[in-house]
Length: 401
Image (cartoon, rainbow, N blue to C red):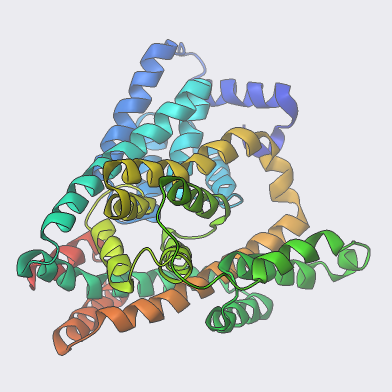
C-alpha cells in the first residue's frame, strides 16, 4: 500500500503496519528490540561507508531495505523519496529517518537518523582535528589543494544533472536565472528561495492566485530581503547552534546548496570564516562518507572545538527529525496539491541558482594555478563522459599533491 491511499491518524498507523508486513504478510514481525538493532547496525554501516552524495546513499538504502531485507516495496520506497523532496533538509538523512520510523516507530526514527549521522560526524571531527593541528603545513595544505579542484568539478556535474530535471520549463528556467543574478545584489538567500518558489507557484496557478491574498507573504519576504548588518560578530556557541538550526530549517535541494547558506552567514554576515576555510570544509566533506551536511561539523570544530562541532551538528540535523515526525501524515495531501507542486519546482530552481553562484565564487578561490585548473578540467571530463565514482576522483586529487 503506498502513501497515496493513506490519510488520517488511523490510516497512518495502518500504513506503518502494512509496511512492516508488506514484503511477507505471513511472517511474524520481529520484536521491537530486534528491529531497533537491525536499524542501528544497518545505518551505522551505511553512515561509515556510503560515499558519493545523496543519490548514491539513497541507492544503497534501496538495495538494503527493498531488495535484500524486504522491509517495504518499490512503490513505498518511492513514496518516501518523494516526501523528502517536499521538506527542507538532507534527503538521504531524511530517508534514514523515514525508514527507521516505518520499521520501528518513534524509537526507530531516532535510531535510524542518529546512526546514519554519527559515523560521518566522528570521521569529520577526526579529520578536522588534523586540519586544525597541521592545516598550515605543506603536507596537509597540499592534500586539500588537490581535492578542491576535483570538488568544483563534482559540484558542476551535480548542477548539470539536477538542472536538467529542475529547469524543465521556461518558467523554472527564468526563475533560476533571476535568482542567480539576484545573488550578486546582496539579497538574503532565504528570500531568494521564497521568491523563486512564489514566482513559479504564481505562474503555474495564475487563476488561483487572483483569488488569493498575498499580504501574509509580503511582510516576511521584505524582512528577509533586508540587508544584513555589516561587520564581524563575536563568536558564541548559541549563535553557532541557531545559525545552523536556521539553515537546516529552510535549506531545500542538494547538500551542495549548503555552501551558499554557509558563505552568506559565516563568511559575509558574521565574519567567522574565510572563503579559504569554507572551501577546506567542503573538501574535507568530500573525502568522508555519510551526509554532506556534516560539513557543519567541520565548521563547528574549527570555530569552537568539540563543543562547537556538536552544537553545529545538532543544529543542522534537528529540523530533519522534526519535519519527518510532524509532516509524514500530511504527505499524501501535499503531493497532490498544485500549489505545493509549483512551490517545490520554484524552490528547486532557486536552489540550483544558489549552487551555481557559490560554485563560481569558490572556483575563483580554488583554481589558482595551472595544476588546479588541469585537475578540475580532467575531473569534469571524466564525470561527464564516464560513470566514474566521484570518490575515486577525490582520491586522484589527493594523489596529485
